[in-house]
Structures are given as C-alpha cells and as structure tokens.
Amino acid sequence: MFGDGVVRVLLNWQRLREPEFCVRQSFSRSVEHLGNLFTVWYSGADGRAVDWSEEGARPMRVREAAANERSWSTRRAGQLADLEERFRREELPVQLVLPAYAVGGDDLVIIDGTHRSVAAYRADVPVRLMLVGLHGPLDADVLPDLRHHLGA
Image 1 (cartoon, rainbow, N blue to C red):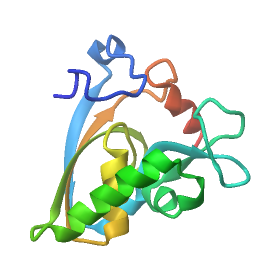
Image 2 (image 1 turned 90 degrees about the vertical axis):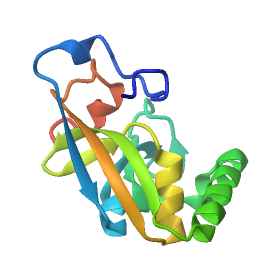
Image 3 (image 1 turned 30 degrees about the vertical axis):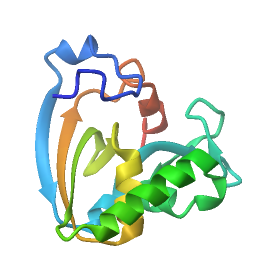
C-alpha cells in the first residue's frame, strides 16, 4: 500500500518480504492516542531538533513534537501552520491513514505522515486514525530509526 515512494524513511523494503513480518490495522478516534505515537523526529539533550543519527538523539512522540516549536525550521513551521489552519476549517474529523512500525506493547513509530499528525494534534480537532502497523523484528537493518527503540 505504501511501497510506491510515499514513505521516505530508510525502510529496507527487501527485508519486508521475509516471513516474520505482518501488518495489523488499528483504528482510533482519540487525539490522546495520536499524541502518544512516536515520530521519526528527534530531540537532543537540550530539546532542540536533531537528526536521527546524532549521538543522544531521542525520538519524540507526536505530543512532544507538537510542543517543540522553538526548534522547528522556518519551512517546517510554515508547513505545520498551513495544515493546522486547514484542519481547523474542516467540518468533519481529520482522517489520517498512517503507516507505522510496532516497537513493543502498543507503541508505534509513524513512518509517514508526521507533519499531518503533529498539525492535527496541535489543531485539537476530532480525528479518525487508521494505523497500518508493520510488525517485525526490532532491527536497525530494517529501519535505522529502530535503533532508538531497542531495549525499550
């Protein structure tokens, strides 16, 4: 469903053909649930945004990313402001179809749609989430971001 270049994280699509991978869909109407999803945005010890590969990088949940305005680039801030405004004007709930990777328990890492997720959370509007959760090994060879969730 997402293998046509939409997902831009460094996902090893070849590995996904292995038998230990499966996909499970889940649904939610909860803004709180949206806020608890992990993103592929990271912060350093000082709270500023950093690259995933930086030493000490810590993955942010949607709610943390939404509150981390001071470290957004001008471009990111503009994109989020535009999305927030659009979502607030909607008469119907914001519908988000989000591919994600399961990292243990109920925790998922959004692998595409972070801007839309953060904007919907900040807009504080009704949401309808369809989460397409990829379940497989916590192996950084599958997705480098998973190294931040090993042993969690």
